[in-house]
Image 1 (cartoon, rainbow, N blue to C red):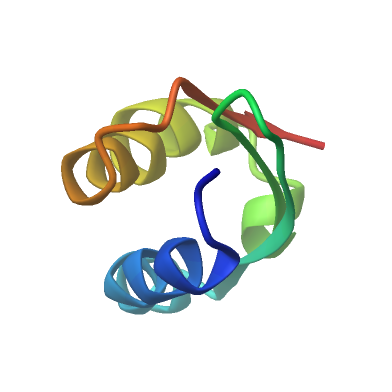
Image 2 (tube, one colour; image 1 turned 30 degrees about the vertical axis):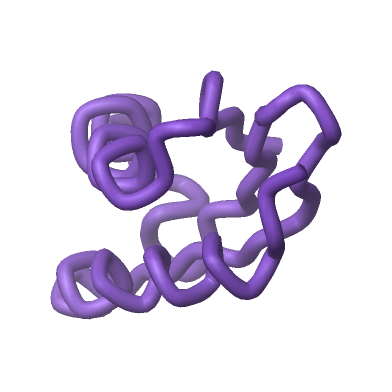
Amino acid sequence: MIEKERVEKALDKVRPMLAADGGNVELVEVTEDGIIRLKLTGTCGCCPMSQVTLKNGVEKMLKQEIPEIKQVDAI
């Protein structure tokens, strides 16, 4: 199983990019089958481009750091 601490450490690398636009990301769950569930907060929570940011930015970076991740979902 993927440790939450590993995910948090990887998220710390993407948070400055999100914070530059007034947003952030919160780790909600790491499932046993490698799915990461995140909550976009701040301006990211209501941005119409948030799904693009999630898939092309956050998910891509997380998978580079932690190859065992199958997918990243926003809740």
